[in-house]
Length: 163
Image (cartoon, rainbow, N blue to C red; front, side, top):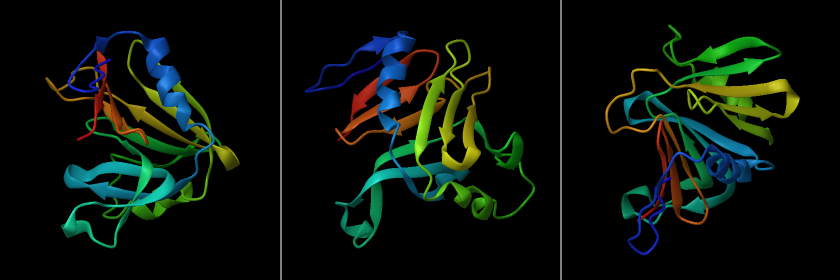
């Protein structure tokens, strides 16, 4: 894990510590889904916060933000895929919006693959599927946390203080 707090950075391969931090998302409700630059799926959870940047005036973000980064992803309902990152649809966002209003029940991370599984209410789930040939220097996925930390998950994961 990289923990940057007052300019200190720590790297880790400790999956238990990563899972413990990511599991703090349990109980939070997803209230927004969108795609950012590069078609990265972003999910916003928890308190609604206003952006500090003048260019984002009047817009809100979640206290928690999950970004899929370079990972493939799937949204599932009762074992069936209802949306994924490889869909041929022009706008898969409508299918992903099924997660809005749903509460996180469980967070699991696979140690070997860094696959992230989030179980939601109503039998919904989000699965992040990092590719084995990871792009150098890029995290598989990241989680912006309310305390200003950013978990960047990869084969070696990190937690960095947001600036």
